[in-house]
Amino acid sequence: MSAYLALFRIRFSAGLQYRAAALGGIATQFAWGFMLILQFAAFYRTNPDAFPMTPSQIASYIWMQQALLALFMTWFVEHDILSSITSGSIAYELARPMNLYNRWFCQATANRVVKATLRFVPILLIAFLLPEPFRMTLPENLEQLSFFLVSTVLALCVVVAFSMFIYTTVFYTLSSAGVRLVASVLADFFAGAIIPLPFFPDGVRQVVELLPFAAMQNMPLRIYSGSITGSDVLWGLGLQAFWLITLVILGKLAMRKALTKVIVQGG
Image (cartoon, rainbow, N blue to C red):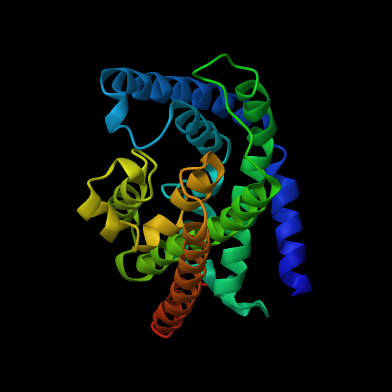
């Protein structure tokens, strides 16, 4: 365990050097956040009764989504991992006395956390100072905040476990472009990255909320915004834990099978 914690710290420290990229990302996320809130505000004025979320909930949902985008974005991949597979340098990875799946999992998690750390505070500080309907609000109570934090950690782990499947496919295809495109589009849409799940038709939403994608950003953002409360929160946390365990087990089995067929040429 100490080796994986050390790896996490090294990756985290290295990621803190990219402050200029973080500033550019903050500006982009503010522009995108304002655009989304204005879009939903226009729809809300058209028919408020048909809206499943209040303007305040939508603003909180969107700003927290932008602040934690690095944790939840399914289209982000570790190019170092992909390069190690296609170039053959994975031979060095396999020679290390560390489980490859666990190593890559820690690496991907650390890189996402450091990206979010550089952007999280500036975005939220400004979002709390904005006028209505753009202002972000705090959770109603400490319990809601606690559930949000737990759900965020679970969502991050689910996203990383999902991305591990993408890395595993490269052992067979030698290119992740096609798989990444399909996986990121499906995951973003069904995880509420484009449209929050409460806006889905009831029949579709009930099915989508059982998929692993709903265990990603959908759950922590809806808990924070107050879109989901009571026993539904506990059900959501349980679903996240279920999909995390399932994806990790399946991911390890898939990687173990892929590694049995690895052939590295050259030297």
